[in-house]
Image 1 (cartoon, rainbow, N blue to C red):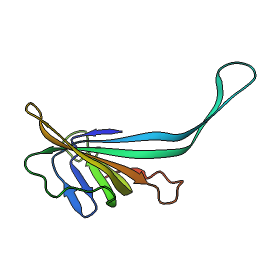
Image 2 (image 1 turned 60 degrees about the vertical axis):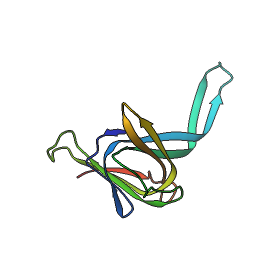
Image 3 (image 1 turned 180 degrees about the horizontal axis):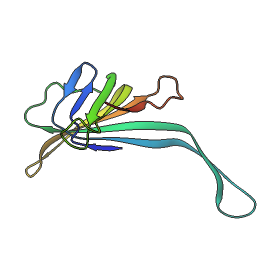
Image 4 (image 1 turned 30 degrees about the horizontal axis):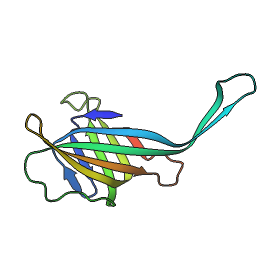
Length: 135
């Protein structure tokens, strides 16, 4: 999932401004594959362990002294829509997300950007930690 220029992004009790994108990736940490005796191609694949990661990119307009720190956790939510009206507005929520890394990039042509990577936590191990609802 990729959301460009989300309207509002919040983490825990705070709001994150100037967010240019939020991307949600899904990775298989364990892959089970089985082959038959009939040929060389896989006949069954399962991914019993998965990780959901979120990457938030912020345009930095000045100094940044109040950064999130690895290990901090909280609810991450953001609102997106196809245009400036309230039509087709969606709310994406991650009940609990944990900050994994925080990094920066500075360029004379693009300015300064902060990258925040988080890992989504499922409340019971079976429920998808990301929910998307009409706002």
